[in-house]
Amino acid sequence: MVTDGAGLLAYALWPVLALLLVGIVLAALRAMRGPTLPDRVVGLDTVTTLMVAFAAVFAIESGEAAFLDIAIVLALVAFLTTVAFARYVERRGREGPGRADVEEEP
Image (cartoon, rainbow, N blue to C red; front, side, top):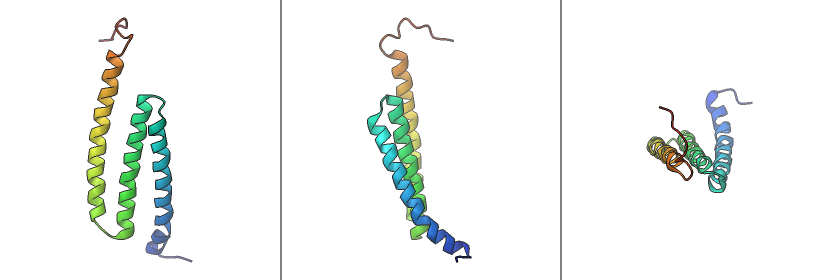
């Protein structure tokens, strides 16, 4: 039986990495299938968030600090692209077809 924290961590890392990969695949399927543009944006955001988590867990497992740098850069890029996609979806909904007769609230 494992009694120290390092041994338990060693046993837990590989299942965590496997579950993160399953989550990445499922979120990628949501991003590809849609059915709407906001669903795809949320799917892509979920994929990038899970990739950040995967890089962080892999940094712990491998002992390489470079993977943490990758995770930080990926998180920054993911945040900026999510904000850009959200603005695009918002403007598209506001200026989309059939929206001319809808009154906007101040």
